[in-house]
Amino acid sequence: MSIEITPLQQRPEFIDACSAWAYGQWGVHSRRTLEETRLTFASAAHGSGLPLTQVAHHGDRPVGMASLFENDCAQRPDLRPWLAAVFVHPDYRGRGIAGRLIETIEQVAHSRGETGLYLITTDHQGLYERHGWSNTGSVSYPDRLCVLMEKRLADPGTLS
Image (cartoon, rainbow, N blue to C red):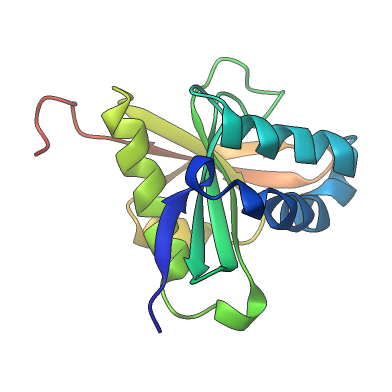
């Protein structure tokens, strides 16, 4: 099975799938509506700045996603940018797709001149630690305790 990772800008037909995944996974814990979530992914598909989303797909079937957001935690407006919305469809989990998506967003951030990334997670700390992320504390978001994690990216001038 060949899984490709492509910018959502190149596959805007995946906007609805990404929106449904994000809303289904995290929408119940936020004040955002499904339509607001869809607008975020439409912006990622049609804009040139942040947010941006990478989509894992098997041919014309989307199977996962990850995004780079300016901010993903209102309690920490001092931190930017954020790895967010990492999701792999349950039928495709356990195949390393999440790791590939994480690495892709890290590379995209690095290519944009970023030197670090942040994320919050409630139950996938181990996944991120395996990819070099560090626990830097916790934050309540919006009413759940989340682990705040950080990854320092190499100086943009040092990676090839």
